[in-house]
Length: 371
Image 1 (cartoon, helix red, strand yellow):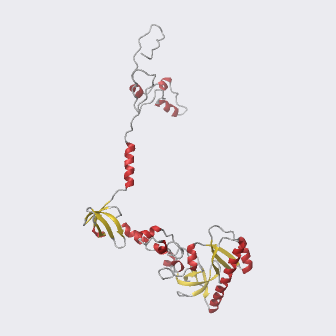
Image 2 (image 1 turned 90 degrees about the vertical axis):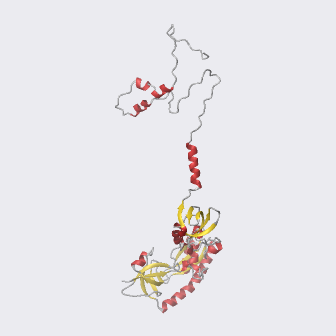
Image 3 (image 1 turned 180 degrees about the vertical axis):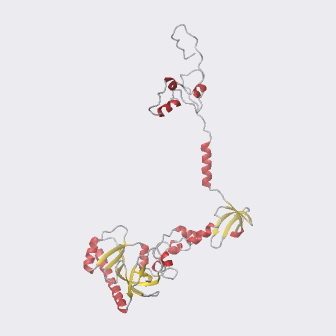
């Protein structure tokens, strides 16, 4: 059973449609098909081969009922005339209800199952009362669909600045995002009035050749890098991507345009930010000036020797005491000699006190701090 790709609906959707029996259709045939929304008129584009289906992001479609007849064409013209009256009725109801929305277009399906209104709005709109009123006036199912400015151009725009029909109304089924970076890479004018489409946004065609520009740019030396050429050593100032040329400044301050094939080697230059970060790391890793202890007014005598940085204070708990706390509960308790023993490194760094002469009494005499 053959299948075909159809374009249908006001938003020009694409879908894969099957046929009944052995019906055959050619490109450009107008047919009546059944979709998920109801009966609609569509245009046959091509046969849905495996290669064509692999290129499509969405293959949801329906069934082709028959080839359009003269009666179908007359009915479609009547629906187009009726759509103008339905749009005027909806605008009147929107004004009466005071809704902040802008109606763009209306679509009346061929089978009459529903009427779809497309509108623009900055915020979410509560149109439940509007749907009730329109369903009573038009005696059919009403659907409200909010769209963006690109979709508005897809519905209403006709021709672009190039003189051809706008892309969104011909072959584009999805509008990919376009950024100013794409225009800068292709060296297009940055005047918004010249690179904007009918929707007021950047033109979709700026994205068509962007991947090719990126691929060619990767093969060229970066701007700012040092290169060795047949003309000598120089620095890259700009790139001519499509021509494959470079504008360089030589050591004798000459600016010349060379071809990519004239570049012998490329010398990568580190970014200034990385250099500053390295300098900052070296400054931070350097030795810091030690602060000398202040001498108190009441202290006398020679100053005490400074303890090394790795020495622990005299009243600190020794390292082996921490190991005792980390042992399991069934381990043997530590003895008093182990917990009261001072670390060896502290005994070596501290200056030993002079031995006191033996006193006559058991109690040693008090030492005078001024001695």
